[in-house]
Image (cartoon, rainbow, N blue to C red; front, side):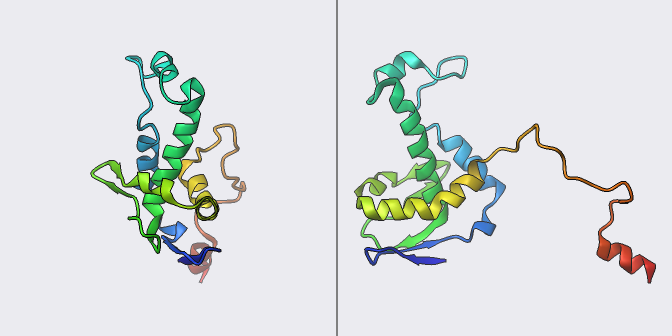
Length: 150
């Protein structure tokens, strides 16, 4: 679907219904790019303290990585003079170009991708009740049940 931004630039996005599990896994793996980990798999806070933004910069980097990966996965094309970021061979390529967008264009792009970020990063609530079924349900759809009565 193509969207026109206030600046006149256009952005074409994949339909949200076309997102796949592999897209979710890609976001999950690439959102940690550039974040230092220790031997136990936790964040190496000593190294993080030496990075730009220090320890607090880790959360900002994590959020930026996540958004950049989603942009690379969902933007099909845009009218900006910079290449659209892509995920190739398990790596995020061209994300530095996102930093060249005007703040207004980036803010609008961010609004467009918010539903994708939500869909690709949500995790089920383990405390949520399972889908409710009635005691009279036999696991068949109502259409199937009606066809069996005929």
